[in-house]
Length: 257
Image (cartoon, rainbow, N blue to C red; front, side, top):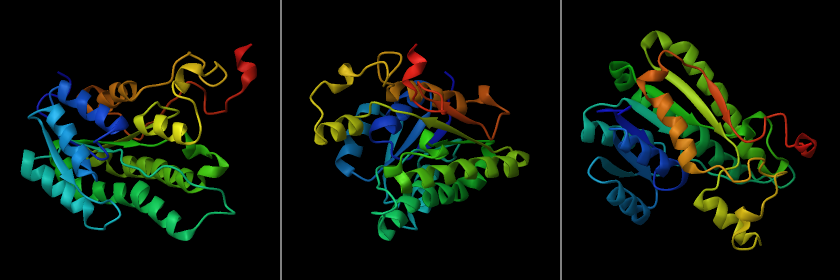
């Protein structure tokens, strides 16, 4: 078991990539504090995960959320070995339609809350020689025009990851990041249907969209997360790894030739 006896916080852990990471971590021997905002969804998730999962409901738009989450983990497990900053608001608009309140909410949940979660957990992570894994996005490099605020938040997370890694390796705390590309989460499938896609749309995508013929799954993201949370990735820190079927240069149909 690659995470045997480790205590790990996973924010946004009640669905999608977060739930997949929590599932994989428990399989690998960890105890997991599953953070979420939807209590019914959270209860169903921890019931499925079993005795090694504990639920914490906290609203990341509130400044006291990081302390609530960290205190809950310490109370449940007595320590913190890992923190996965996965929770995020997705979506957005372009510069012409960008509203300041939407921008503030995006930065609060996607960037401010992760930073202050790391701060709240920092002393525990120093004690355990623990690991932070930030879940970013390939949009950190520029992003789509309609994802302006989201892209800025993920770009900031990427800089935060490298800054904290550079500063805190001497404390034995590692900070790394994975940047998923297009992942078939429940939310992604639901959003596409709401936008007019036909049922079963993921199976109709061309190789121009998905070169390997199938969309990436949350479970595949979770397997990558296990490496960065475990001792086998020591002493590496400050790594930002793209997990996408296209390179970050762009989606060029000519690559198919």
